[in-house]
Length: 172
Image 1 (cartoon, rainbow, N blue to C red):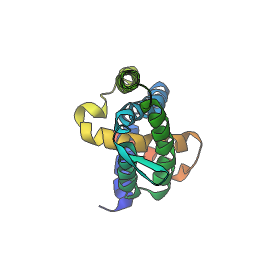
Image 2 (spheres, rainbow, N blue to C red):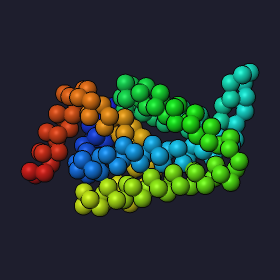
Image 3 (cartoon, one colour):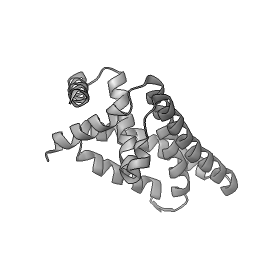
Image 4 (cartoon, one colour):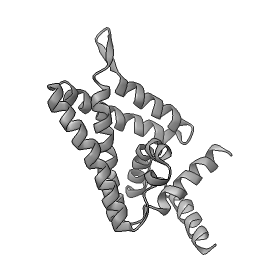
């Protein structure tokens, strides 16, 4: 399967179960919130290289970035900038007393997931997380970037192709 087909397959699969505006809105808030909840404890393990602090949150975002590069370079670069900002916020929260940071991390993580389930309840669709938990967690941050592009009217040709494919599959 070519990268274009892999990207298109993923976009069609995601977009088909994320059509309701409320569900999309909730995902745009919930996924970065979940990322923050995951990144906070990852900031507790790291090392310094000169004046630069590197932690496991940075390692995770680089891993995601490398995977996303196999899908789409522009989306991957935008993700990297977006995720780096979240990692920086996570580092600031992670520097708070550990009990406080852990409470914020847990609230962000679980609150973000509750929001996802509420969004899917409104949409009346089963979250991908239930069917494919690993795939859902790997792909969700990528789709957040994709959704922002769609909302801003960027790369309309790609999104028109996605919509045509969804309509074709619904007719079949």
